[in-house]
Length: 100
Image (cartoon, rainbow, N blue to C red; front, side, top):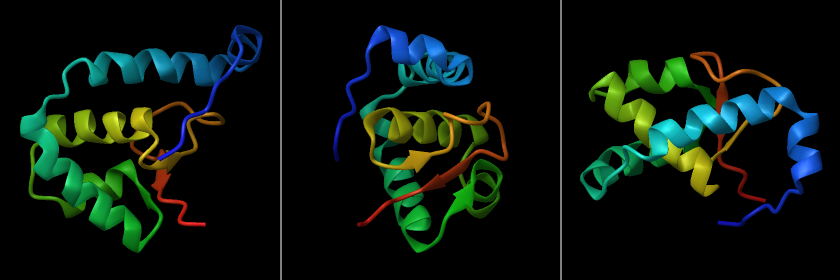
């Protein structure tokens, strides 16, 4: 799990990414260790194939709120990758694990 350090200028240049980071933080604040099993299920699903948020929600037997919080936490922590730098976060946001 790696971290990416960005300068303020590089963040502000990409308005979509900045807006998405703001949304992610709102979800991450709600994350707690009780969601670890949900988070682990998402990781296992995303390891198998690149998915959309909608696909993750449809394939899991968990509340949509728990899944959204866990997905945002995984993106925030760098455990999964996403296309939030080019698209606004929504149900069509792609998520994957880069195992290279």
